[in-house]
Image (tube, rainbow, N blue to C red; front, top):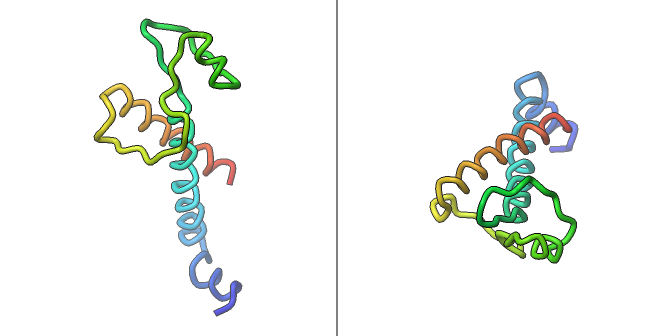
Length: 101
């Protein structure tokens, strides 16, 4: 089966096209959400929201990075606040990727 035939069978019409874009958005958005979550930092107290370019800048401002290497994130291992952050990141990043597609 050629690519044209595959597209005609699997992506033709609104349902197929939306399904193909939806799968891609879910996969890429989840990966992007994991990357953003893994690179967030925390510190004691209520600090302002800041975006740092490097981990050393984050340390200098008193933040501890959640992770310095990409890793699989197990939802059950996170506290309630971290679970909420990750779930919201998934929604935002999947929506972002879907719109970009």
